[in-house]
Length: 418
Image 1 (tube, rainbow, N blue to C red):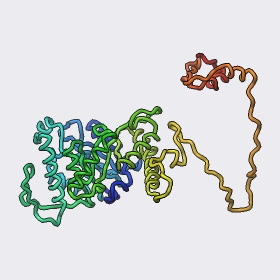
Image 2 (cartoon, one colour):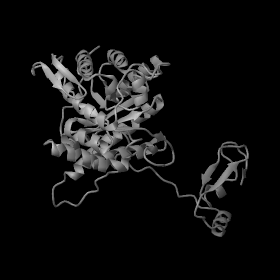
Image 3 (cartoon, helix red, strand yellow):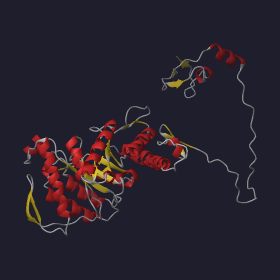
Image 4 (cartoon, rainbow, N blue to C red):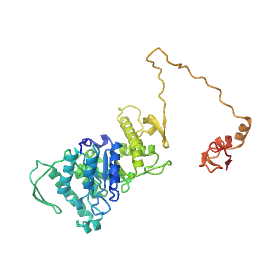
């Protein structure tokens, strides 16, 4: 188990570089596949691999045992419970589990923490049954206990809370790097607690869609300010799920450039600084890491550069588009290169080849029959479909364009049927 690099040190959230990760299902029926996907996440350059934590679910692997194996099988990627189930994991034991694995992995553990849910299942497995209000209060007590366990210079721990009582517990071990809880929260009291006590916010897009993030962020900011904290010090992360498609749909439902622009907008406008993709499909993870992630980083860098321009300069568009920042643009699943303009500079007077413009021929003219046919047919407002008689895939073309010029399918040599 080799040491890797810890995640970046805390800096104001609106200046953080976005983190990217995967959110895997700890399927007990396919344990080796989970490990393979975790290793793939590292190979793709993602910074986080996470799994959810449901200790009462017999179909899932135990998350902390799984994290130990993942950390031993990788070198750089950080492991994160998404999120740890507090009612089933006492805070002292949880704090020492995090610190131990962080020490063994060289600082590659972060703590996602939740108040708990599915209370019938928790109670059936020996855990407490709490009301929503009680779960919030218990989480506040647990965060305090966890921080005190990590404070090795703080002396014996005494706590007389309603949910957790400690009678002289010894602190330690301390984690290898500064670990702060990232809380999964959605309702008003939990959002206020996140601002008051947490180091990060970790919601999911299925429960907190993009249009709700601004109001939720404001409640976190209010909670931080009421506690005398800087709201910008709280990292905002986002569990996401989506679908790559050739047609544009809603949020994260479309082409790679649409994904990149939507995520970059969330970073520049809502200050989301981490995206964790829920997917067990290797191809989806590869496409996310290779096509979406680098473009998001470029868009964010460009947007921040624009927003930092001096006063008096023309007002920039805050949100750049993909074509403005990349030396190539997306065309479906392909990439079209953009040639670099020739500035005329030469390093030598010697010419190894003729740089004079290549000769060009006259543009072919249409035949008289084609001109008459084009003149008679009016162009409609939508494409028409031309289908090859050999049952080739339909070709959508404008009329009168190549559908009138071509009388045969170039693939099968058969005539069109309309």
